[in-house]
Image 1: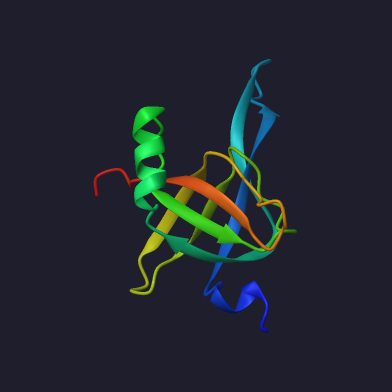
Image 2: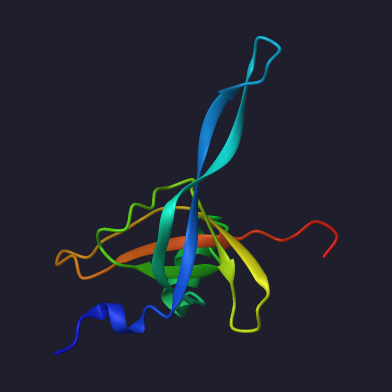
Amino acid sequence: MRGPGRHLNRRLEVWRPTTVDDGYGGQETVFVQQPGTVRAKVDQPSNADRMLAAQSQSKHDHTVFLLPRADVRRGDELRGTDALGQEQAFRVLATVQPSTPVYTKAPCQLIEKAGG
């Protein structure tokens, strides 16, 4: 039997929110790219996931599957290109692993580009 990684057909960059000094005595949050990329599969959420998101007023519109050891956290952004070469960015709303950690499931929100 092959591992679950064979279905992870995309490579995404992980960008993590980090607080930095703004140079005026305050702080601001910026996204900093983490080293390397993560293997991923991006899907539309299942009907059950859509119903749960609607009930909880979540902005979950995509589900990203990752290897169980991928260092992806709530609040991160996953960035890459789709099959047509279009840039995409997803905000991670949560990360969940099944009882047997064969993958990490990350409900995400597609971040729309300004003016697009």
